[in-house]
Image (tube, rainbow, N blue to C red; front, side):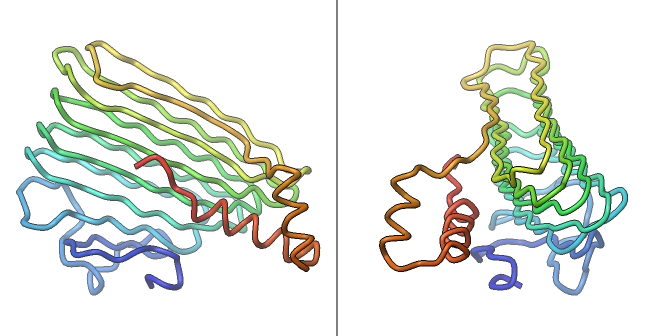
Length: 223
């Protein structure tokens, strides 16, 4: 699974989903609230092909617990994918790398709600928008009252075919003073110098496209 979905393994307790379904035989933890501390980080893995409605809830209720989310999904039919994160643990970290490839219609929404101070919710979301696809990406960061010194970041970036349509909708609801509260969205455009270098190296047009796509997929800089 690690090689198939380009996910780097590390020592962790795991919660694994494939094609939108929780897989207990590949998981070391049940799917549910993270309400106890573990010696290792918790790694939630969500991979495969999705269609229709899909939802992932992450509820952190303990202090000092690192939680990582790795997503690598594709859709060939219309799909909805929602990720809801609540962090009520002081010094608990949630960090997500989300990689999606859309060949149809995709609606994606992520929300991160800080319920106490001094915790972290970070999303790095990447989209490959294929020919003729329609993508709507929204993200909401919520920091409740009396929740100072939180870190919040929702970062969207997309590699898009010229015929694809993409809409970004970032939102923030901040009621306390954070350490950081960022929100960004961008369309990846390779530089002419990059394309020229690859072509002068002997790559065909299709090989240049593949190399640029792999560079986009593998370049997660947020964390």
